[in-house]
Length: 595
Image (cartoon, rainbow, N blue to C red):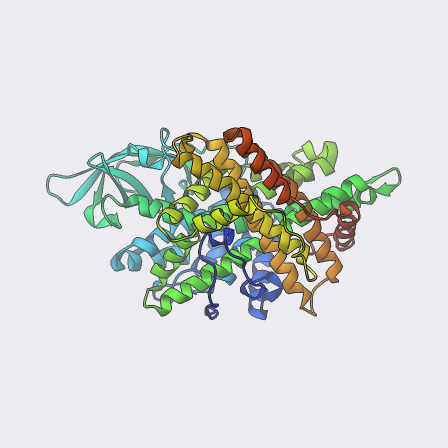
């Protein structure tokens, strides 16, 4: 399945803050073709066959082998290495569906196909790719990725595992340990990050059975109990020098660039988990009767069902928007002469900000959903006999691995400022324009068309980000503020970036649906989803902006900025109760996630 043709003038990574995207630039699930629907159904059928095996550690290898037999390990690998390459959007259909498994299998699958295989594809020599990738695609071998250590989690470059060249120059002698390593219990290939000579952060490829490579016991985890998680120990492990992955001293390129892709895939897998959680919730709400009626007839429960669905729909809109952007960028780079692996890596790096947004928003939506599903179940939600409890436990890891959500929030802002400093994004011009606007009389109008109010609100969201970030950077340039020491402000800006990107993605999808005749529901349903989200996003952005402003500005400056915030925070009142009830009614009638 080949990539689609690249679109003209697609937004660069992070550019959504200063430019608007066109409706035609977004790919939405309603655009799936017949083959993509077949792929989705194939994975769903696989899920139905697994039963409760995904929860059991002893069943992980069996499930992995079945996934390999379906060709799911090779969807992102070129044919010359044994893969059955699919386009980026279809790959992400696979990951979304796998995310709906629950239990430990999504972690096992992602650790193997993502951070396990991609370092080899992106940075391996031709000999390394030909030796390892066919075995990993077929499932004969399983992969693990060894980065974290007891003393280095978010600060990955502080790793202490050491590698020294042997006297004969043929091997590196490795000593140290790694922890929280997914798939360690059954992995055959380990990508291990070491400090060569104590100061050159580098990736090495190791294989099960190498003398001195041993495993700790399985970790007793809060959730994802079906996945294998162990410590890996290295005591004088002899690794051939030809097993260096990439360049010596540049292992950080591997670690961080592969995580860009991993973060996006976590977002799309969280989407699958979110939809599964909603289905558990609505089925129970329809089955459970109190006061002689199903609890799904109660307004308080309908609020929960609707809000879960609204956030899931928004998450889905954003995920496939990012997927399509990366696909188009990859296509453009390959036309310019890059190899598939180089183009895929470069595309993920280009949209590193958006990938971080997907990871953070996806994991937090899933957490919201599973929490509400437990609440819908009441006392039964606290019982391990019901799926709600397992979903609650399994979801919690999403905000921790592939970089904590706090780290990812700070990464978004630092990446944005870094690109502005390098001249890759013109943030200064638009920020200055917003400052000039604050000194002028407020303008009226500008909300024309069927979605004029949402378009205007979106522009105001972006102005708010530029106003807050611009004022903070100005104070830093004047020596009055050090943003590196003001993580709370960075988090506030990141939250506004997340809300804005999700809101824009949702608006683009709803606008595109307006022109489709074969959509599932009347446009009123999608408009209800949109307006509830924009109503709440306006308030959330206002709070984040206000919290940031009062923490670094004072006096006349603060007064001016708060007046600007009030000007940029207007969205027409919406009857959110009515809108949510309309959304909930569709969900209750379908008895599954149906949007």
